[in-house]
Image (tube, rainbow, N blue to C red):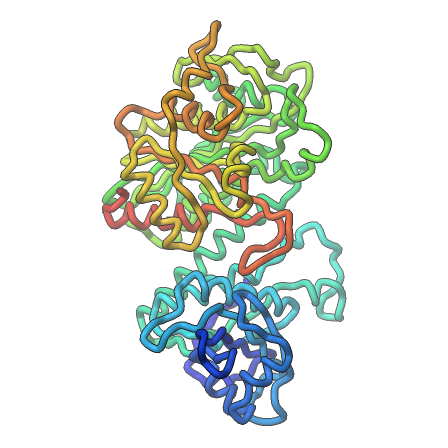
Length: 515
C-alpha cells in the first residue's frame, strides 16, 4: 500500500520524482483553451507562466483523466517530471471541483506513475472534502496485484520495478496539523486499504481462494482488528438446515462455509447487517456455462469480498455502530454429487425451492444468509452480489443496480453511492414478475421470466427477508470486475465495487441515520 503524507511545502520545492498538477478546459468563449487548476501556481512560475501553453502544444485537451507528462524546467522545480492530469471543464472562480472529478484525476495520475517512488500531488485541495477525494483517488489508483508474479528483484531494475504501484503520495496544500485534513486523509487510507483487500481477494484465482481459505482470511482479520467471527463448516451447515448453501456447494470437492464476522461498539446507535455472495468459482454447476463465460468466474465472490472489507473498515474507523457481515461461501461445480435441475432444496427458512437452473446459484446461498442475518433483528440489511447478467445488460459494466423492499431506504442507499462516487441506479421490483417463479412442486422456483431477470432475482431474495426490516439488494455484476482497460482509479480486474458504499452506510448507522 502506498504511503500518504500531507505537505505544506511548495509543489516546486518538494523533493519528489514527479509533481502532479491539474489542467482543465477553459469555458467556451475564452481565448486560451486550457487553464491550470489551483495548486499549480508554483510549477507554472518555473515555466515562466507558460505551462498551460506548453501543455496545449503537446496536445493536452484538459479532458477528464487525460495524462500528459513533460520534463520539469532546468530550474525552479526539484522534481524532474511534471504530470498534468485533466479535470474536464474548469470550475468557476466561486466553485470547487467536485469530489469525484478530483478522485478520478488523482487515480489516473497515480496509475501513470507506476514504478515511481514518490510523487507530489498539487491538485486543488480547498477543504477537507477535497483532501479526502484526492487522497482516496491517488491511493486507489496506486494498485497492482502481484501475488502470482515472478519474484524479480525490483531494486535491480527487474520487471517488478516498473509495475510496482506509486510508493509514496505527498498531498501538497493539505495541512498535517489541521484536524479535519488529517482525519480526511486517515479515513481515505483505511477505505483505500480495504478496497485493495477486496481487490486482492477477487483477483486471487480459485485454486488459491476456496471457501475454507476465504474463511481463514476472515479469521485472521478478526484476530487483528478485534472482530467477532464464527465459521459454519459443512457439518454445522447440515445440522442447521442451510439447504441453499449446501445445495450449491455439494458438487465441489471444496465444501462450503457460512462466515459471520462482526464489529460491535458499546455506544452503537444502529445495527447494520451486510450479506455477501461468495461463490469462489462459478462453473454454472450442471447447468454448465458455455466456453468464454468461465474464465473470470473467480470474481463471483466479489459481494462477499466487499462485505468483508466493509466490516473490517468499520472496525478500523471505530464506528459507533454494530456492523455484521455474512459471507455465504461455496464453489459451484458439476459432479455426481451436484444439485441437478429439477431438484428441490429446503432452505434455512424452511421454504422449499425448485432449482430450475443451477447457474442461478447466488440467490440460493444469499437466501440462507439473509434469513440467518434477519434473526438478529438488525435495523437494516444490505446484500451485495454479482448476481445477474441481466443487470449488466440493463446498466452496463460500470453501474450497479439497487433494489429494495422500502423506497425510502433504496433512495438512501442510492444517495450514499452517489456521495462516495460509485455509479448506481435504483431499480424496481414489479410484483407481477413474482408469478413466474411459481413452482408446481415447491414453494418457489429459483428462476422466473427471462425478461427482467435481474428484477426477478431481487424478488426471489425478498422472499427471505424478514417482514418489516428495511433491505436493499446491490447487483454489482457489471462493475465488480473490469475486463477492459483501466480508467481513473479503477484497475483492470477486481475493482472492489460497493466497498465504499457499504462503509458510508455503516457511518450513517453510526450517526443513527440509516434511512
